[in-house]
Image 1: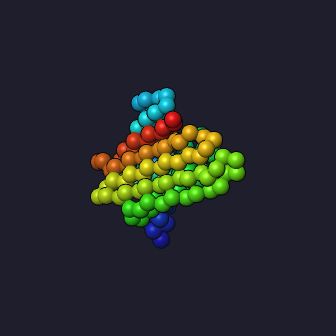
Image 2 (image 1 turned 135 degrees about the horizontal axis):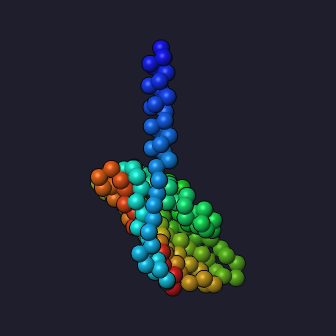
Image 3 (image 1 turned 90 degrees about the horizontal axis):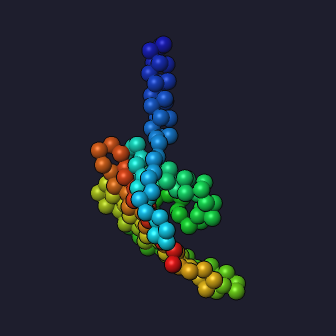
Length: 139
């Protein structure tokens, strides 16, 4: 019985450690075009994306509605329009592609008061970790 409890505690600890796998990022380029490369210590594209999204939203809460909460299960393109009063229609397009051990997302949009901005994410699994290239653009 004690052995079963010990194995259960150890397996729960391993799950918690994997769920809280660290994300480390390095800025490669900054300015109107920013480029960060992040490494997630785990090979789950979904967990890596959620860790990056959480970090981005923590740094800039206005990005919460920009980045979907989860990676879509399959490739898709979605356009969302919202009336911003004097600024006209805010249109945001999300293009998502999924491959074998890879995923990419391109988000673009703007309105009459704000120049178009954009974000690109490329995730790929590589030897037990996930590499994320994150680009953001302002025009």
